[in-house]
Every structure is written in structure tokens, then in C-alpha cells.
Amino acid sequence: MIQAVEAEVTSSPGLGDHGLRQILADVVEAVKHSINKDINGAELLYSLLNAPWLQSLLKVYECLQQHKKEPPAPFLPYTTQLIRQILADMRTVPNPSAEARELYNLLREPHFKALISAHDTVAQKDYDPVLPPIPEHLPDDEEAMRIVCLVKNKQPLGATIKRSDLTGEIFVARVIHGGLADRSGLLHAGDRIMEVNGYPVDGLEPEQVIEILVSPAARSFQTVLSEYCPSSMYVRTMADYSPQQDPAIPCAEAGMGFRKGDVLEIVDQTDALWWQAKKLPSTSACAGLIPSTNMLRRKQREFWWSQPYQPHTCIKTCESGTGLYLYLNMRSLRLCRRRSHSTGSSQQSCHTRCPSSCYSALNNPYEEVVRYQRNPQDAHRLVALVGPSGVGVNELRRRLIQSNPGTFQGAVPHTTRAAKSCEESGREYHFINRELFENMVYNNRFLEYGEYRGHYYGTSLDAVKDILNSGRICLIDIEPHAIQSVRTHELKAYIIYVKPPTIDRMRTTRQNAQVTTNYYATRPFKEEDFLEMEEAARKLESHYCQYFDYIMVNNELQDSCVQLLTAMRKAQDEPQWVPANWIRPTEES
Ligand SMILES: Nc1ncnc2c1ncn2[C@@H]1O[C@H](COP(=O)(O)OP(=O)(O)OP(=O)(O)O)[C@@H](O)[C@H]1O
Image 1 (cartoon, rainbow, N blue to C red):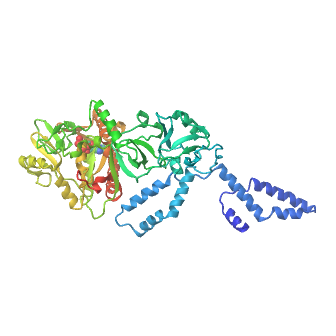
Image 2: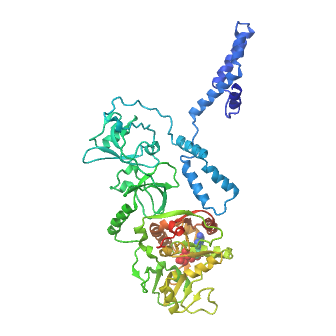
């Protein structure tokens, strides 16, 4: 035993010869003098003080003192979530290696889970309970009572309470998933609270009960109900939400805010109006309250009607009557402006293939998502670039395709204009007549199309599918309005948003660049172009950021190309959140 202790402490790093052991060394030195003077018993004392076990004990003591001063910190505050994420990602790997399988099995072992759970408990300082004494006066109908002791730590209790207007009784309204009360397993929604720390609470205001609850002692509750917790669902949010600005939330402190595009794990949907969720990646075991789909829809409708301008309004139905299409202004007609080289009248319009989910952001404030990783045998995901006009999406797309034409390719657009002598049908464009073009429009074959100076231009679904079926990666740039038309089960589009850098950086990097004007002329960038681009980027982000899978800033061209290449590889080879109906198609999709 002594030897074991010695082995342990001598291998401990960082022990200096100071502190208590220094004192001991001084004592030993003094005793040595006593031996030299032949004082009685000094020899015995000398051997005692020199005993290895005493030295070892002192080292342990100093080691503990050191840890008291600098306690070891947990690596992560909440590792369980990370492990779950890794397991979910690994499940999507099509042909996992032997090592990956071993890791997967290891992470699912009960003893490993217990270890991680212990780590998280320590990380959240959920230990060292000091239980208060059981209350002396138990109520008469003791049979129906449960005495619950919750040991307070720095975290909130993780439960909300409400008062019955009729009886004045206080009930647990909800227990926040992963919070202190939930993890204790002792409190349930619907439990009636009889007294707290010996104080009867019937008739008190909820605020008064909270005051008692936050005092650092034990609590007593009567149990009436318990509730069932369903398994998690993951969603991407299509709206912003702030509990602090929501007067309807039962408890703002228990609420969780989110921004458009955040991915949430919904851990409890038992309440029709208020769900519980965690924002991913989650660093906390504790969930927060969020409005349910119905509740958020109601809020959005109220907001919709109170707003003078709607971002995703379908203004005009297609002539064919089969779908809803958008009229866009000239500045956003990237497709037509770039493709056409004719002159004359500049009247134009642009349309997108907008599926029945046109109003989906309003109808589905939460889009259910799942982790998806493309199987290497499957077609590649379409990669679509969006960005404000002039930011460089065309330049980036062109450079990437040029650098690796065997891997990347752009879709060949259709047009009704006549081919020039140097052009070949199927290379620059598919040259087709007006009747055929309109027929394709009628049959919903275009992802987006537009009219410019009497000629149609459009990117067809088949042109994209041809590339994907050939095993290459199709890279297109689209107007943001067309995002919905490529977010389908078939194309599984990965949307990359190309953002302009700061105006200062644009001034430096765009010194020799040419902007294409509305009249198809090119000229150097002006200050107003930068301002316009910045404003367009701001609007684009505020309306469409929930659909972006990846955001990159087009600062230095070379760096941007590398970044784009990396993002494209990620899209094809790494697990991503995608709409659940891409993987489990419904009738609608
Ligand atoms: N990072 C960059 N640094 C310097 N110049 C750039 C950069 N990115 C793009 N450019 C230049 O800016 C100009 C506009 O780029 P590009 O034509 O690709 O814009 P766009 O986003 O496709 O917009 P539009 O649809 O209006 O043409 C081009 O001259 C291009 O070479």
C-alpha cells in the first residue's frame, strides 16, 4: 500500500521541494544536529522523519493543496451532445472503416456513456449535495405526498410554475428538459406544490413562490401527474425569435432565442404552444422554451399583416397557370444580363420554378431536418451559388470549372435567340424556338428563366440533371428567388452564399476589376457600386439566410477559390443537415 502511494506520487509532475516538505527537511537537519550531540531519542525521531511513507504523504498533501488552488477544469461543459452528434454522423457514413465501426461501438457502450455522464455532471458542478433535514410536520394525508429534496447549485431550477386562478393552488407548469429538476427525475409537469422549505404556498403569487424556491434549501412537493417525453426531432428555423420580446411566453428566463437558419433539437413537444429545444451545437444539457409551430405561425401571421413589405411574395402567377412565379427587377436578372449580348430595349422579366412550398417559410416556421451524407454511388449534390450582383459568383464559378473541368461543370442554358456563327447548340446554349421554350415553361422544366429584349433565357432542370447523371458536380449561380426551386429531393442543392467583404477591402481588391452595367458595358467599379452591393447583400441575407448551407466572403480571389473548393467537397463528402422530406419524401415534395 505504502509502495503504491509512493509510486503514484513520485510520478506526479510539478512537485517542487518547497512548502511542507521544506519544513520537514529543516526539521530533519535540526534532528541530525541532535544526533551528533548524542541527545536521547534523536535517532528514532530521525528515522521516523526520514520514512518514505511520511515523505509520500506530504507529497500527496501538497498535491491536494495545489489542486485546491487550481482545480482541474472539465474539457467540455456538455460532452453528451457531442457524442450523440458523432454517433448520428457516423450512422450516415456509407461504408465505415473497421476503426470507425469500433469507435461507434465503443461510444455506445454503457460504461462509456456512464463515464461521459459522470464527466458532464462534474462539468456542470452537480455534485457535493448537502441534504437538508426532512420537515418535521408532515401533512395528515401523508400517503398522497411526496417529499422532494432538490439540491441547488449554480444552475436555475429548470421548471416553471403556475397558479390556478380558481383555487390559488401552485402547480409545476413545465419541467425544462435537461435542467436540474428534470435530471433529478423528481418533478413533473402538473405536480401540485404544497409547501417549500416549510412555507405553505397555496394562495401565494408565483413570484413569491419563486423567491422561496431560490433560497438555498430543500423543497417539498405533492406529486399528482407525470409526463411522457417523446424522442428528439431536429429542425431548421425559418424565422428569428427572441423570448425577451415576446409578452406571451410563460417565462422569458426559461425561453431560448434563435436566428433564422439555426438548427434546433426539439426535445419536448408535449405542450401544444410551447416546446422545449436546444440549439445545435449544444454546450448545455438544459433546454429552453420556444414557441410551437402553431404558436410561431400565429405570431408570424400577425407580423406579416403588420408589415408593409413581404420578402417572399408571389406577385404574378405564370401564364400557364401551373405554378407561381416571381417578377424580378432588372438588377437581379443575372441570368439574362450575362447571357445576352444584344442591344435595344431593356425590358425584361425573370421567373423561377416555384413549387407549392412558395409560402413555406410562413406555413412552416420550422423545417424538419436530418443528417445526410451522400453515398459515393449516388449522384453529386447540385451546388448553387448566390450573392449580390457584382460580388463575383460568376468569376468564382468560371475559375473553378476551368481549373477542373473533369469534375465541375456548369449547366448549359436554353435561349430563343439565334445562334451566332461561333456558337454551337449544346455548348454555349441550347438554341430552341419560342414555342418549345414556352412549352418547357408550361411543363415546369426551368429552374429559373427570364426574358430579355424579346428573347427567353433559362436554366433547365434537365441540363442540371445531365451533368449530375454524368458523375460530375454541377455548379450553377442562381438568383436567390430560385433557391426554393433547387431545394428538392432530386437535386439536394447545397447553397453557398458569396458575401462581399467590407467596402474598404472591396476598394483594394477590386481596383482592376470590371463591373457589368445594366447596359452590358463593363467599366471599373465605382464607390456607388460597392455601396449598392453592400445594401443588396444585407437585404439578401435578411430574406434568405435560412437557406444558406455555407457562407464565404469573396475577399482575395485566390483564397476564395480554395474556400469554394473546400465547401464543395464538404457538400459531397461530409454529413449535412438537409430537409427531412428529401430523405423521406412526402406526397408534397
Ligand atoms: N475577389 C475578387 N477580387 C477582385 N476582383 C474580383 C473578385 N471577385 C470578382 N471579381 C471581379 O469582379 C467583377 C464582377 O464579378 P462577376 O461578374 O463574377 O460578378 P457576379 O457576382 O457574377 O455579378 P453579375 O451577375 O452582376 O455579373 C469581375 O470583373 C470579376 O473578375
